[in-house]
Image (cartoon, rainbow over all chains, first blue to last red):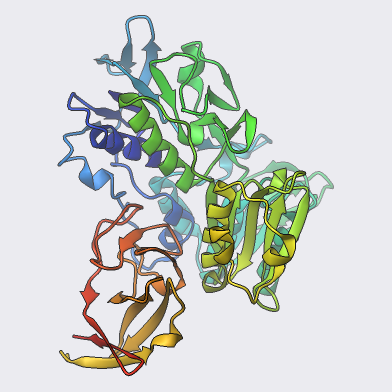
Length: 401
Length: 105
């Protein structure tokens, strides 16, 4: 069993292969020099912490020894030979596989404007070291991109006493994946903390310390960070003539068009039986974990379809965003007011099925209800709208219904 | 450090199949009530990133950390999946006259 990619998904898959009873060799091939480590802190605690950050190994990585999993670090795959079922490494090594998993992840999307190569990006532990040199009190940090990573970095820079300007090409933040009203609340929160925003602003060119907008205006700072999304690492799959779109395409059991090759996590566009027949690629730590575990299991045992309801969170200042399911599939929105300022939004499809839930506010207010919502979505319930909205009734009672 | 029974709360302070936080001597505990009215106590912070478990969801005898889905069996403190690997410490409980006592220390 061979896994290409040693991120969150690859680590979960390796351990799941063992847990499924496979006793033969398991090899994880990673380009990074670390064992699988937790990436969520990289935009938050690893930036704001006093101490230089050490990678925090995932719980699965810490089991590699006891599970007899071979991990090769600093190792790049040059190509996959599907006919002979072999993976070729750039240093000349060849590894044969019975089943292969593509867990190659994604890279920070480069800024496609003049001087874009000067902008720093965030994806790895090493990127954090570069950012920490600039994220300091009194500095002016210019962040291009008002998505989750851009906003988390903006909150971290603010915490450190830096001045922050976020430049977003669309006229709202978080257009991909976060409902507009919630994104609006997040914008207000950042503005109240002193962060500045330039929405609907197109970037003409950048230097190490300045950004020119298409309007001719120049914004000067101390560093420019590009947080304009991630692009899946699909080059190996493409070269091996596996179908790819925005990600390596798989069925609901995470199988690619080749029955011996699976794909999961950030690099994969997968079918989810609960939501939509067309494949979707998700960038989420929890999805990477869930899919990694399922892919590992499916490589050994009779394949099962994915069932886990996608979920992600984002920490910004003292608040948390949590999103479960697919709010964008909703046609009706019902709000449950958790306190004066915080509402949990439910999203229901045309036939009244709960398909998504999202909230931004203090974690203690929203965490339990979001977790229950995730279960309700998994159960494809068609809840009574007034019950969803009634904040004085425990949401949990709907689970029993 | 004490090693005695501490009066933690009234049992009705905890909803069925739920959890609350309790602080004593600078230490946070999580107190649980199951659907069939059994009571358990564990350390209050998740062993992954020290998040208060009292904000998490109890399903049956499993508590899920509100932040990253770390799961523990509240009756034994054993991990049950998610990003956690360290078990939770548990404490004995006792109900007397409608009050919940836990053995701290």
